[in-house]
Length: 146
Image 1: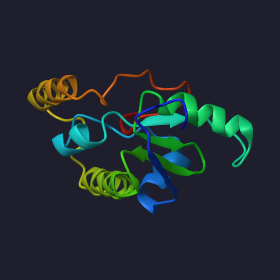
Image 2 (image 1 turned 90 degrees about the vertical axis):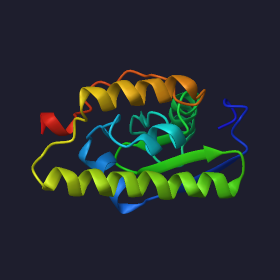
Image 3 (image 1 turned 90 degrees about the horizontal axis):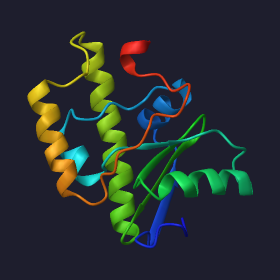
Image 4 (image 1 turned 30 degrees about the horizontal axis):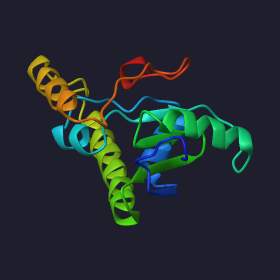
């Protein structure tokens, strides 16, 4: 993640709940839980490239410039932080967030967030330099599109 000067440490793992979103090619919804917006910002998605290749490093590096947490399609997650502990904490946070969304979706209420929550979350994101907007990559579905 040399392309992001603030990235002092990276953690790559295959946490089951977040990786499930990556494998299913489903966008992780945002504007639902304020803590995720504050600590992670919008989660990026890197298109699949063979793990360990320069093409994979290029794709993840490009997405990582704008996102502290990146889902790698059909693979796993990589996060960056100010140190290893910060990056590890973000990895725990993304998997917990995905697990919460998964459980809430199973309850049948949907995971869209109220208009007030979206406004509040947008306000929170605007105050945090790491929460930058990005387009959803082509072909990535949302939970509502499933």
